Every structure is written in structure tokens, then in C-alpha cells.
Length: 160
Image 1 (tube, helix red, strand yellow):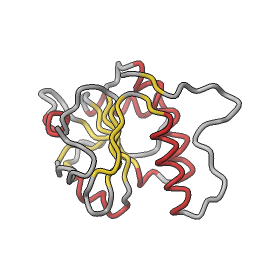
Image 2: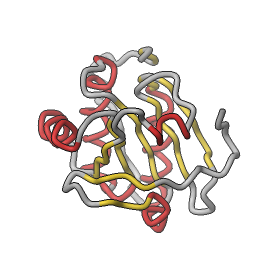
Image 3: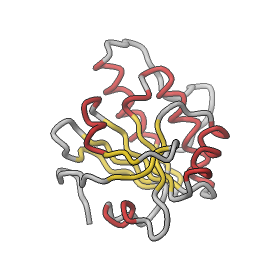
Image 4: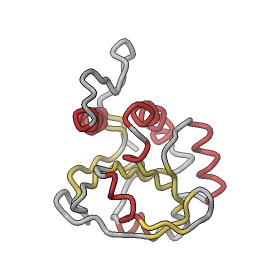
């Protein structure tokens, strides 16, 4: 089981264009929010519009989605939920999901430049998303960024 402080395992998967990509090549934009999901997961469907909002403001280069679905299905999910960051496909028998020890989706990992995992969150976790967003905003010198609209009630946690 992977835990906070561990080195994130490297992996290779097909991106949304069907081209093999290597995870460690993404770390030049660290920190990276690595999000595992499944298309038919209601909590994943709830989570992604929130991540899309953060990504549009703070930069898609800091996000990577890994869908437990075919390349065609991850492309459809991306279009439906309107996010602008990369999505890669981890198909059955889900080697990367197994490598990362997933029990639930969505599962979020924050990966640092030194390849260490600084945060792990299972399900929808408002605080984890806020913490990552605030950190990115500070890195980019954006003084007043809110990941969530304060006029909309958002649950703190929603299990996957």
C-alpha cells in the first residue's frame, strides 16, 4: 500500500490520443494532482467539474486524470465533464491502479517534484482539493482564489 512520503511509482499508459506516455515526464510541472477515476462512478462525476474549475484558473499542467476505462471512454468523460487537463487510460486488469493500491475511486495523489507523495485522498475530499488549490495559487502568486463558490453548499466528504 502506498502512503504519504513514499516515492510515487512511475508508469506508462496511453493518453487520450492513444499514445504511450510516461508519468515521470509530467513531473516538471510538479506539484501534480494525479486523480484515478471510473467513468460510471457518481462520486467521480461529482468531483471532476470542481477539478475542472481549479485547472482552468491554475493550469492544466498540474493535473493528470487516469481513467479505468478505454481511451474512447476517457475522451467521452473528459468532454462531458469539461476539464482541460490530460487523461490517460488504465484498462483491465488496471495495472497502474493496482500499482498505486487503489481501493476506491476517485483517489487523489499529490506528487511533488522529488517524486514523493505529499497527499492521498479517497472519494471527494473538499479540504484536499482546497489545500492543493491554495498551494498552486500561492506558487502562481494568485492572491484570491477559491476552489469552491461559497454560495454553493459543497459537502466536505463524499465517499467513492
